[in-house]
Length: 219
Ligand code: VGL
Ligand code: ZN
Image (tube, rainbow, N blue to C red):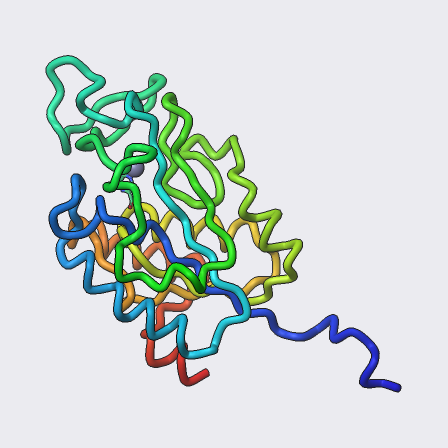
C-alpha cells in the first residue's frame, strides 16, 4: 500500500536551455563566440535521460525593441545607453519575432522540449533572465510553471553565459525556494571573458553549483 502514496519528496530534475538560437550562433545577428558548440552538448544532455523536464527560453523581440542600438539615434551596438532611464547595453538588432535569427538552432533536438518560455517582448525593458525582466518586475511565468511541475533541481546552460544564462540562474536561485540550481559550464558560451568570470563568481557566491555536462549525465 505504501507504494501507492504519491512520492511527494521525489526529485524532479529540469534542464533549462537558454536562448540556443540562430541569432547567438556564428552567422547570427548577435553571435556569441563558439555559440553553436553548445548544441551537441545540449543534445547529449537531452538524450541522457537524466532529466524529467526540458524547458527552453527564446529571446523574442519586437522589431523596435529598445535594447537595439538602431532605436537610439547616433548610437552604435555594444555601447552603453539608457532604456527607460536606466543603463542598458545597446545590442545589434537580434532575435526579432518571426525571423530566422529568433529560431532555435536547427540542430537542437527541439522535439524533446516540453515548454518554451519566450522573453523580451516588451519594447521598453530588456529581459536577460528567463524568469523576469531586467527591472525585476514583470514575471515571464516560468517560475510558476516550474513550481507547478514540482521541479526540485534545475540545471541551466546555453547562451550567453554573461547575460541571459547567468541572469536566469541567479533568478532561479532567488525565486525558486528549495530548488538546487546548477550551471553547466561546457554547455554554455559567453560574449565577454571578463563578464563570464564575474558572473561565474557571482553565481558561485549565490550558491549555484558549477558543473560540467559529464557531471550531469553521470548523476
Ligand atoms: C542575450 C543580449 C541580448 C542572451 C539576449 O541571450 O544572452 N544577450 N539579448
Ligand atoms: Zn535580446
